[in-house]
Length: 345
Ligand SMILES: *Cc1c(COP(=O)(O)O)cnc(C)c1O
Image 1 (tube, rainbow, N blue to C red):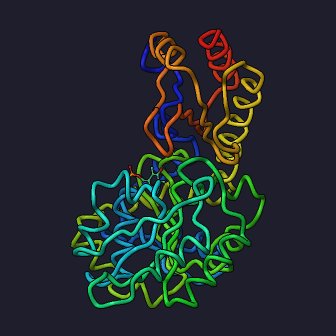
Image 2 (cartoon, protein in one colour):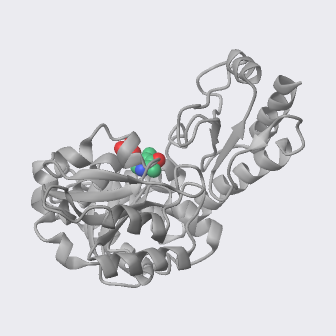
């Protein structure tokens, strides 16, 4: 099986979507000012402010690990702590970067229900200790969509932000798949972020058809103070910033960000439907975004791997994870479903 064959290992296995690619080519014409002083960065930031219907502060980082870590560091002193899900990317997949960039702020793990934090779980962790010997809780981070492919409803985010306000915590959202969440709920980006009480959002582009470049949106502008210095010090200030920001113009100006996410979500739903009646296959979580988590037999996992399928078995809560992308072909989803059926027989 050639490497060009579509796989379901991750949504970042896919390439760059035409809209981002075209904007990159367009941005490549002539000279522009450097370090974010260019017209593309201005345009991209304005698009974000229009899309989110608010005057937020916009920054760009090369990847999600940097975006999350720096946004969390901006909310914390070194003696603070960050409340996150036990399955959160910041805990399991960022190699300690949030702790590193915040000079030691500790991550405190909270239990989850279908990958989601809940107000009682946050309260439990935040109020467990209030003495001088324990790192002081300062921020809650949510992943939208979650690492197990579920999606927080606006009311759930609002309920969490209420607890945050009550306890003096700020609210960060890891939106590596924020577009997939918007596509699933059909609600506006504003409704799902600042109107629900989110202070800072890391809006992912890479998993939705871009090459690089995650946007960091501060709705609470006080948290953005000196954030440009933080990015620069962390090696995240692109000198040719237009190549990070320009593709966002292509993604945002005609709604490609939402179309691509909607397509990936539909492919995931199709896969789940096609294997729903396969004996022994269990759907581990509701399919709300672009991921499908299946409980398969060990034999089936071995067979699928032997037949050339690539997928992860260690992300989120175990099981086999299949991710769909902006360019996933329906025929390939059907092939996978048929092989899952054959492998389980
Ligand atoms: C992919 C991903 C990120 C970003 O990861 P990078 O590899 O650093 O770009 C962040 N959060 C979640 C939930 C992700 O899936």
